[in-house]
Amino acid sequence: MGRRKRIWLPNYFYHIVCRGNRRDALFNDKHDFLTYLYILRQIYDRYPFEIASYCLMTNHLHLQLMSPEQPISKIMSLVNKRYADYYNTKYKMTGHVYEKRYFDKIIPDPIAMLEVSRYIHLNPLEAQMVLNPEDYRWSSYRHFSSEKTTKVEPFFNTNRILDYFPGTDEEKKLAYCEFVEK
View 1: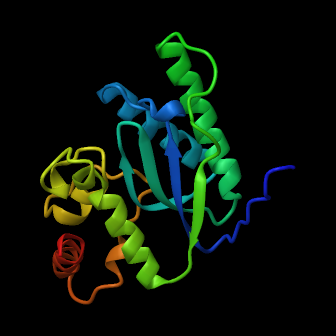
View 2 (view 1 turned 90 degrees about the vertical axis):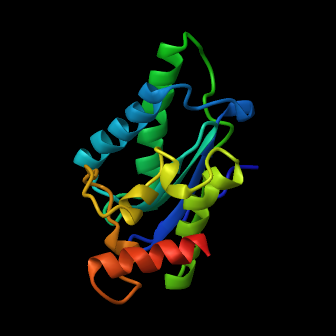
């Protein structure tokens, strides 16, 4: 029996999850995390997409992603292939880097958008890696919680989440952080 065909709705965000094969680490050091973000940037330059929130954990990752021009499957295929090639070359390995095909679920409405984003940003706390979501470096949460402007990747758009809250930019950030941490 074949795999089910992926459904792509261009104007919807999806919750994407990729896990390391046998739940092994996908990211062993800082350079691995940076390389994954670099690969996202490379793919974005050719096939634009948007990420509303993300979290790169040690053995898996979460993306809240929308691709208006190309199917999600094409974006993820390119990202996962490039990262797997990098990973296998760096660690002198062969074979599968990812456990199986990535998980994807359409995010149907604003409430679900907020819930998925909160889930993604609380993932490092659930794994007991940090005590506060802003302390986890490989998550987009710091872009929501910080008053400072940090370098933001061109594919990343906090407004997709923050625009669900009223007020100034700072008031929206505060409201979002309260929502996540409540």
